[in-house]
Image (tube, rainbow, N blue to C red; front, side):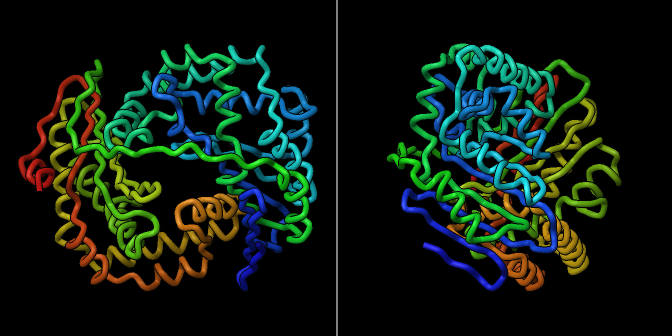
Length: 423
């Protein structure tokens, strides 16, 4: 199946289920890709948290005819700026390079997907690197707060830390890495996004030659188990306290998604945003405070964080939660105009970035089953009104808070927040 749209985006679905998405940006001289493979941490066995991350690392230690050293040197000689990451649903690989080098770079990463060497003698090095990542989180209380919030807010098994648990990682053997690759690296469920300068027919045919005969396999079903709101303290000997708060919102494919994101833009995203103004500027309570919107299939969430001193932690928590509750009273026209200006800046930057666009194609397809053009996004943002956002807040007020505190002592949660959790 091949489709093309007037805004320069293309779609091809291969017979094995692989999805190719592409957006032409003929004014640039680079090409970027992003590929999402359905092999993320949500598929780790219950006693092997970190298997997806270790498998990802092993897949990148040589592929096809290239050993680890040649794999790295070939990408460097092509000028490829590349990155890998592991999420709940996917292992993601991405990269960007000059347009004329892209076909060769794509061939190298096709080998990663289909013919990784998974060298046994590299397993311990890969394991030690992952263990260092895990220990670095435990040594950073801000990262620890984010990880513990994730563990207690998102549904099981997608609440697991992507880097894994140290004891589990130490126990993983090579056969388990190989099994994870063989079970979960498959074309059906894999999404490849390309953006920049390319010839569509040539790109479609090359991907077909590289990945079109990749054998499909049946996905392993996963049952999600939602979690209830909880207030949790992690004892951490420090002069600081780190506060992480999450509450549910609408998912990415919800018709009022933009109103939901707009409420977060009012909270955070600049020195005039409410959290910065009320928590930091007026009272000097913290050195960092922000809010973001997170999505996964069928779920949206607002995540807030603040880092402060232990002495001022209770007041920081009180003011932070009060601002979240105060959102129910609505937003003002001036706040909406500031929000629109920020969105416009973000759209301009997106328009110039091949990496951003290739990643957005994959993200949209995963959560929407289609792609959104920048024009569509701009029109939707332009159509936002305070009336619509305030109605959304009446229908979906912040509540059901999960709160994690990392510091020397637990904090008291205000009664109105506890009441909101109970409602």
